[in-house]
Length: 315
Image (tube, rainbow, N blue to C red; front, side, top):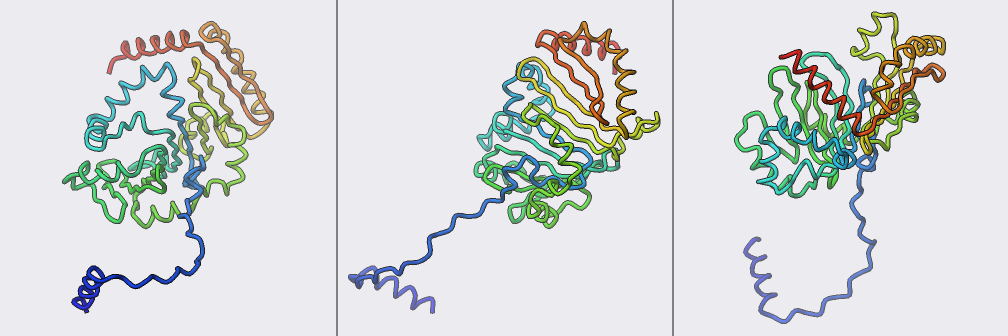
């Protein structure tokens, strides 16, 4: 059968072809459907997340503070950034546009579980050289466009792939696998199915450099609960575009609790007001609301004070 096929191809090459019949009209080609969750700021984040954090890396890079942060980030990443830049032609610190993550089990061993989403990377050059980056590392394997990373001491394993042309999705959990990652990607944006989260999310200024939302049931609030205060949620945002602006809301069990705590806190703000441009602490229904604004000069001054304190305390 194979020989006959070869002869037919050769015959077509050496003889004038017969006139081709007019092609029959067919349905228009459909563009490949893109998962809408790749554009959703809450895309792929688990509905049971105890902590949700998002960072607008474009705004972060544009801030004056980035000049101070970039060396620290580069040092933390070690030679990984240089390897990606050299072998893939991709500068991760300049390519990433947005990072979002949703985790649960904060304070658990071997570590929290959840989903990590990175937007802005170009899939083609990264995937083309991923094999070279991984090399012979026994902790990392690649199969069916999914990278699996074994967990080291005190770490959960991970699995990641691209869910779109520039959206990378990673699952970090004790059971991280290709199948679990596929379920996460297929699930879209399950966090939008939580009315409680959406109510908190609606009060956050998400257009800022970074924002966060924490569920009050997480272990991170256990120490506060020992004081007789058990928040149901903690959320807020930080902007570094012009100095420093932060706003946060602590959701308490009642309006009275928020009002009483605001009264206690306001008495402590006097000694801080001289260090910042604006600061306020008040109650809004059952929320304790905090807001602070600092100029670039004030931010740098406080950063120096913190650095001097850390040096004095020693290792």
